Length: 171
Image (cartoon, rainbow, N blue to C red; front, top):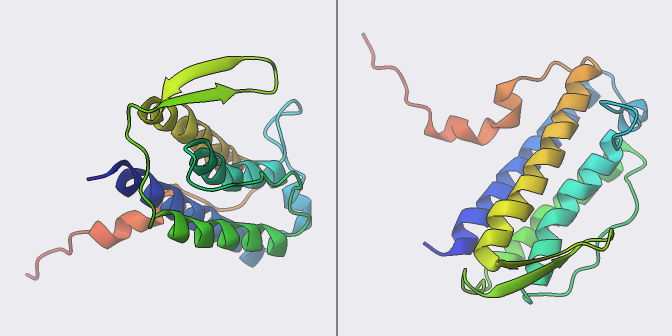
């Protein structure tokens, strides 16, 4: 199995989960006020968490030299914009899943805005940075919505798991 066969489904499934969580928030009568909510004062609000989650896959594939990608610098201002950003990211993922990812041992440089630079391989970058950051920001989004009273549980975080659910045997 190729590296892309491991990573692109993870990104897609969790973006779908985030979209579902936002839909559940909408259905509960939550709107744009929710996008400004935070877990803690020194953390980014929900809108920024959504933006970061949507930027992570594109930043990775660009770093691998597969495509050019410009990170979105604007937070969604409405829940509808958040849904569109997620949908656009998932559409891009479908395209990226058709190209060959580089070998896991190919060198990758990760330069951060604070002046820190890391030398990794493609495999290390995906495992130690891209996935970790993706999970961090999607979990932060989940926690913000929970903190704000949206009735979310594990089922909303991993809804894609239900396709594997074993049905009980008939009595």
